[in-house]
Image 1: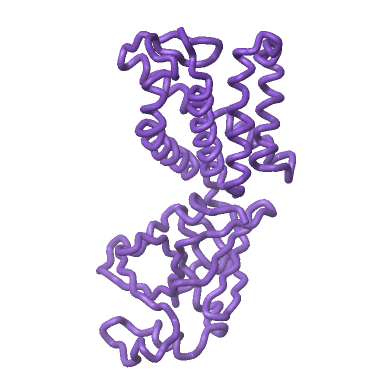
Image 2 (image 1 turned 90 degrees about the vertical axis):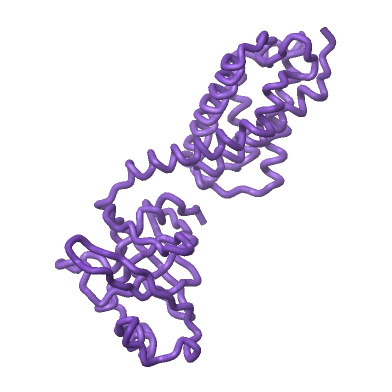
Length: 302
């Protein structure tokens, strides 16, 4: 069989690139596009070692492990030993998860395939498995979103709802330093934008807001006497219902920025609305706001 090594390398490059991107998404770890490309280029070069007799020592498990360490260093750099090993282990986990899906697709379609020195080579196709190429176009996006959603479900279960976090909010020139509590029961989202709503205890922080905003958001929607046009704030109303009560409404404001601090690491929480509540959120005053679980799931490290 004649092997088209350039096409096999391209196949591996695309798969490695997608695996690194998925690792970044799952870890919520930012990196540049150049690092993704350089990392995938370096990772895909491993395929050449499989066809060079003098480089046979590279397929040893120890050398493979060292090679993967270099892949993570190139793609994500080195900041902390803890975050580095998290990225390395997640890279392995994503590889096993996606690789298992790819092998499952091969067996599902009962293709006559062989495993040539660590690379799929379906009989009759010297440029790599057609399922592998189909995986790039169709299969990876499906597995990508499925794996991402599964990680979010697992993460939601693992969230420590009893944890108190530092929260910083910037809205219309106002900077708020709050203490937040992750409330598993807070599922309030805007019905149109689907943004999660973080509820602020206005009994504690209303003095930091302009008087016209406080006066407006204390009113019920059907008793509004102040026009929205007079305000430079992005104000909206979100309906909600609690157990044993009628439909109610909560005034919300779109913030400029919301960040939370967990174990000394700052995270940005995009697509978040601020719900202004004039009811005390806690008897002991341990926190100033209730955080929506989705904020923690979709947070991004700064």
